[in-house]
Length: 94
Image (cartoon, rainbow, N blue to C red; front, side):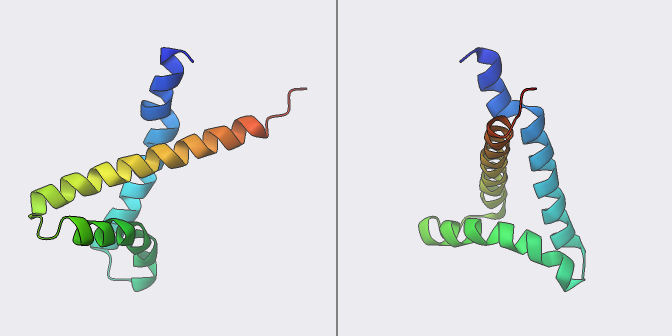
């Protein structure tokens, strides 16, 4: 596995797109008053909030948001790599 492939797994276009979508969903959740639009962002926030409250209760706001940003990035890396693997598995070379 080359360095380029490893870099793509953590900093590639797919990771950036997924991270952008996830951050957009969180911003929509935080800024809108329409509850239906808040559901996807809430479902993204829920696992982090549950784990953070269980393992690191009482984090101040700066540490909470740093951890949340790392959580979103890790999720984006996982989803992008799953997508890349699915794309490679279903590619038909003609």
